[in-house]
Amino acid sequence: MSELTIAEILGQVFGLVALAFCIVGFANKNDDRLMVLLISANIAFALMFAFFQSWTAAALTVLVIVRIALARRFKGSWSIMAGLLAINLLVAWLTWATATDIFPLMAAVLGTVGMFLLKGIALRIVLGLAALSWMLNNIVIGSVGGILAEAMVLVTNVITIYRLHRARLKYPGVDL
Image 1: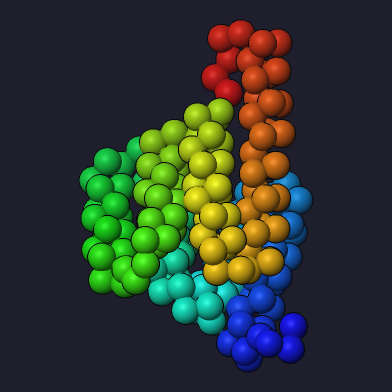
Image 2: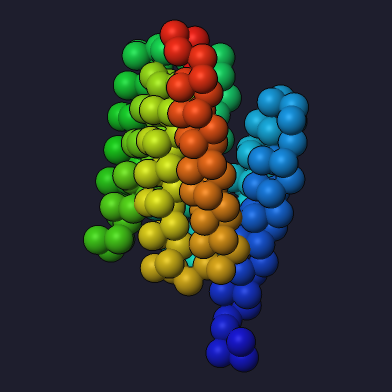
């Protein structure tokens, strides 16, 4: 720990803050409160990435905040989704520093497509793949809070997929 710079320590702190927001958010039954907490978590993630100087991840995380708001309001909008995807690609191109910047770009693309076009099990699978991409980026930069947060998202998604699948078997024909 003594070898860490102030920026790396702050990065770890903001990763743990993001983890706390994720835990409280996913434990919450109110969807609006969940969205506010996820936005708060993504602000902390953006700061975490900035302190770790993972600029592509930081910039794309800011766009995640915009995506959450737009996807809730314009679910299914191909034009808004395409616009966000184009902005994500432009931002990634402008900030690209290393080959591992592919992980946040993959996460951003998967998350955007999932949130605009999918629901139920398909949405959770795509968001799980996005979480895996974020986790790989967090492993590369060494963020403990970021790794734990994405692990929690992955486990939560797997449990929810299982529950949705069981509900489909129990109630065939019901749109879940």
